[in-house]
Image (cartoon, rainbow, N blue to C red; front, top):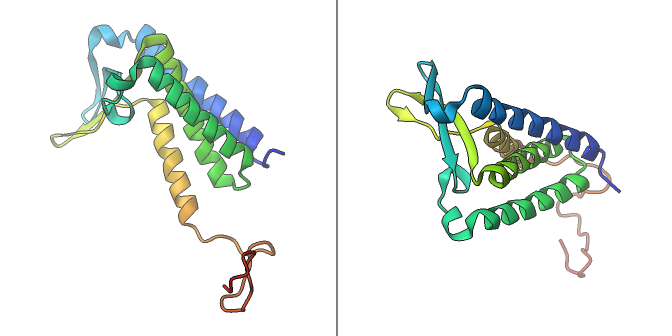
Length: 177
C-alpha cells in the first residue's frame, strides 16, 4: 500500500516536470538562446546556453556511458526514487523525493530529445561563476537538501520505535541491547 504522501508527491513531481519542460521549450524556441549564446538579465544573472552531455555538474561520465547509457542509468535511479516515494510516510522526505524525481525525469526527456540536457541559468558575481543549471537541476538540489535535513532531524518517538536506553531489552538475535 502506498504511503500517505505518494499521490501528492507524484503530482508535485509532475508539476515540476511541466515547469521544467516549459522553461526549456521557451529557452530554445521562444528566446532562441542557442542562437544568442547568452543574455544578461542582471549583473549577477545571465541566461547562457549550455548543452550538458555529462552527468551532474558536467562530470564527463557521458563519454563512457553514451546517451542511452545515461538515459538507462537515470531511468533506473528514477524508478528507485519512485519506489522510495511510494513507501515513505514522512512528508519532508516525500517532497524531497518528488523534487528529485520530477527533475530527473525532466533531464531524461532532454537527453532523449536533444542528446544533452538544456542548461541555461548562469549565476556569477565577483569573478566567481557558478555552474550553469536549469529548473530540474535546482529541484534535484533542493530535493537532496530536504532529504539531508529530514535525515538529520531527530526521529519522533512513538510506540513502534520508542525504547529506553539500558532497559535490558533483547533484540531478535537474542543479544542484549
